[in-house]
Every structure is written in C-alpha cells, then in structure tokens.
Image 1 (cartoon, rainbow, N blue to C red):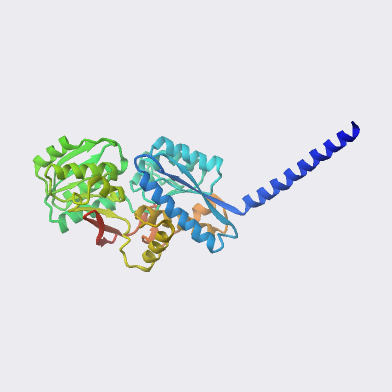
Image 2 (spheres, rainbow, N blue to C red):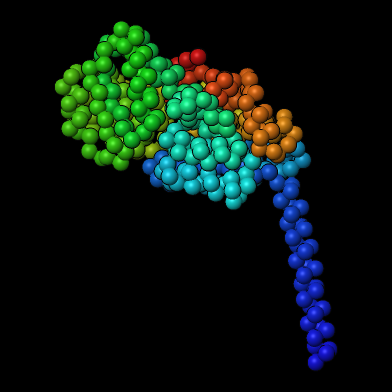
Length: 389
C-alpha cells in the first residue's frame, strides 16, 4: 500500500512539473505574439464588406510576419463578427479587448457600428481604427464636440465624399436638379445625403425630392415612382450595396434612365448580382481607390491579394490593409506593444504611403487623402477620375 502511495505521489509531482513547464512554454509563446483585433461585419447585411476588410488585414499581418514580425514578435489577427449590428459591434469590441487582450482593433466598416462600440475601446484605452467609416461622428463626439482620443480612420469623411459627388453631378454631369434617396437607419447614408445636398445647393443646383427607406426593405417602386414624377437630372442613393442593388434594378425596370450616384457603400461584387450589369450602366460612385490605378503600390497590392485570395481586391480590402499597416508602423515607431504608446504614434501619422494614396491624419483623426469616381459599365467597375482634397 505504501509503495502504491509513493508511486501515486510521484505521478502527481511529475504531472505538476509537466504542467508548469507547459505553462511556461505557453507564457513564453504568448510573450512573443502581438494580438491585433478585427471587429468586422463577417455576417449580416454588410458581410461582403467585413470579409474583404478581414482579408486585407490578414494580408498585411502575413506580409509583416514574413519580414520577421514587429519589435521581435510575430503578429496575430483575432477576428470577432459583429453581425452587421451596432449592439453586436459593442459586444465584439468588449470581447477583443477584455478577453483576447488585443493591443489595437481594426474597427468595423459601418459608421453606426463604430460609433456603437466607441465607448468600449475609449474606456479601455485601446485604439480602434476603422478602414472606411466616414461619418464625422466616428471620431468627434457630437455631444461633447471633442475628438474621441482612441478612435481613428483610414478613410476620408462624408463632407468630402458628399461634396465630391455633388461636384461631379453638377460639373461633370451638368445636373441642375437632383433627388436624394437615403437609408434612414444609417448614420453613413444620412451624413452623405446631408453633405451632397449642401454642396449641390451651394453650386447652384436644386434638390427637388428627398425620400427615405429602411435597411432590409425590398420594395422601392412606390417611392421611385414619386421621384420619377419630379423629373430630377440625377438621383443620389448613398446606401449600402444590398438595398442599392434592388433600388437600381427596380428604378431601371420602371424606366428611370437618369444617372444614379452613390458612395463607397456601393463597392461590392454582389452589387452587379443584385442589380444586373445592364441596369448599372450610367451609375457612378465615390470610392477610396481603384484596382485599375497604375501606381506601384496599387499594382503590388493587387498582385499579392489576387495571389492570396484569387480575386480582385475592393476598396474595403485595400483600406483595411492600409489601416492594419498603419497600426504595424505605429508599433514599430513606439518600439512597444503598449496600447497607449501605439495610439500616440498612430496619431502622428503624416504622408504615409498607403495603397489608397498618401495618408495624413488630421487633428480630428481623419484621413486627408484623395478620392476616385468609379463608373459602372456592364457590371464592371471602371476608373472615371481622381479628386484631390
């Protein structure tokens, strides 16, 4: 009996020693890894956006690790699905920061989702940088009028994007009147509609119809008929691809032949599938980059992305790649994985040569950069023109 007890005791001791050794190895492995989070729309209404953005972020991480990582450590991307819902975006942010212990977060695509999650990363002092969220409220609290210290973006903001499309409507398309049809549940759409309207009127144009729909609506014909009765020169629809595709399809079926304009929320391979390639002729939208751009940075990115994913990268992939690389560069400059030090370095970003152009972060943490106008031709995106800030 005593011999059995001694054997049992030795076995317990050996197991404890093995556990300690494994824990030590695990801690050592954890110490050699820097975690970056991705709070993305992997499912839900904006799923193609989040999936593209995640691919772009993963490519940036892979390339950085292939070059030896950052400050002697490898990077890893932890993805949380916000399901294209504001409440879920807040939950995803909480998980990434408090459970997964990330040092920075590639924030959601949609402005409403970034704003919903803002309090979480702000209170935990962990930066979040959205690849594309363009509503001014993302980085400046509308109640306090103060800059959100730990929120940034790699995209231009709606006042610029809205004015770009208003100028294009008036100057390039010679439009004198316009109708606006917005998603009334989206901060993004409402902001773009507001800034388009202000600039179009300032340029001497007239807004003769303003209508709204709700996300997940499917029948737009009654409202389109009302708009058609006003006979505008152009129709501005600053929504996301899911509803936009149905609006364009139904508008063309009703005989609306005028140019239809939009913003970067149109940028999805699903758009031609929903609307139909022919229906999208004579439509234009603002975007952050074009894969047809002949710059060396764009060519290299497109080649590497296609090699990795066997598809052409959209703007969401490009901007998420840029946002992730901006975080990586900030870690290098900080020479630290401390979230506050990384934030401080990111804030200093000036003339960063990104895929989507040179990026400078201004005093409100917004990217100052150029935009492009994309024209749809038989379901294909074609580069129309570039607009500098």
